[in-house]
Image (cartoon, rainbow, N blue to C red; front, side):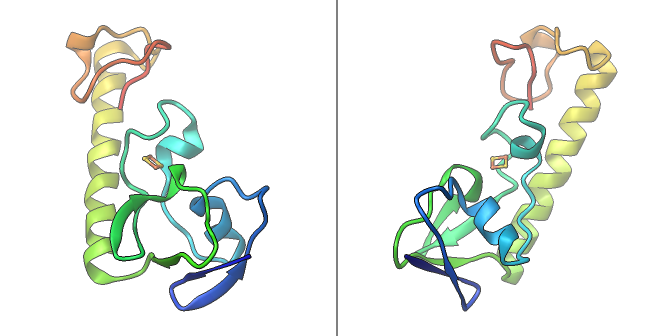
Length: 121
Ligand code: FES
């Protein structure tokens, strides 16, 4: 099975769980801080790509045969950069308010809400 990422044909198997990992194998890097840190997967939105003409989050999308995925394009790069900055700033605010011990209350979070584990984005 194959997908195309930034005009590169990339083979995958059913073991490939998401576009972030698949792209990394092809040396195409997609920022995925909340996925990599495994704090609150799916909250940073910094892994935004375009799949078959529609926006999608690479960390939560499993590759499917024939997908056409765009990672590197100026508008997408800018959006990802903005999301990264936002995420980093929220993480900073979080550690500033609760010491980063992941036991903050929802009031202490600058973004979204705390998860069951207490981490927030
Ligand atoms: S890596 Fe954070 S939403 Fe995908």
